[in-house]
Image (cartoon, rainbow, N blue to C red; front, side):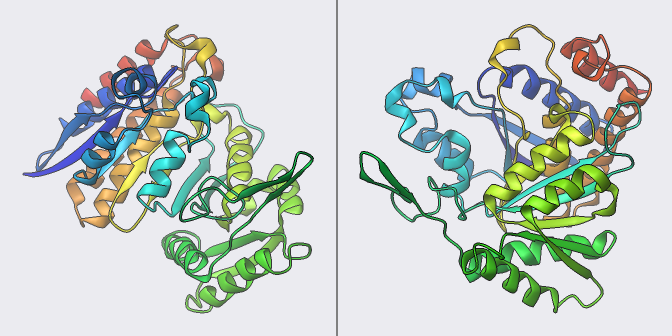
Length: 356
């Protein structure tokens, strides 16, 4: 029996509701598979941590996460935190920076039973997660912005060969297991040095994967292409800000941002995190769609299965995923997807399908 230590950060807003729903489905799926178990450790983050430790992402949580194989992180409502916390990185950005979780992997796939703008889309966006134009995390210390005069601000973008190479390799490795196609998204026609380096290094890495077809698009053109023909794309690799924007767009195109999962990874740990926010306007109403964080948990399981070559974990992932997909296909859906099920009702329906 292999045991995996998993951290659980419930977060703010709808975070506790949807994270508990994901854990309920995870436990149901794990109960159907012999040879593996999950040791879940609840850790403070967000308002809970502010009230207890005076910090939305305290050191005690970071230290505990070091001892885990990975963790599930609910959304945070950093926009509502007291002013003294807004000068620092939000909990998600801090953990990405602190653990050097360099790859933000965000799939977008149409689901049977969910109306969508895109038809038969199945793509994965690899977003470089540590630099680019995200000024709160692209410097070793401090933020990459300077207020020169009251009326002048300079914001820095950072591009390094090391960071580009590792996100490119991650993208090409997945492409080798999928349809063997990678699209590089950039703005090298205007940002000639920074975005140009991103494009050129990705192309260099691509030569090490001769079976993979490679093309590239400017970010503005890519947004239009994604709307018109999302089913054309397989694996997309891009820098931090472009990846953030494109993945939200892709999530809506396949049905709802509430469906959008992601994981943030380095070579040794992974953080499961839905792409959407904390939705404080519906918090506590039992109407939130938990699919995003459920599928993020499936992604975490798949990452663990690959990292530790564990077929039992992979079986748990498929059991969990099939339960979610079957439930939606049979018409049990939350309100945002055109259904009427409450969060708890939807979760219970998935568990019942897994158990039967």
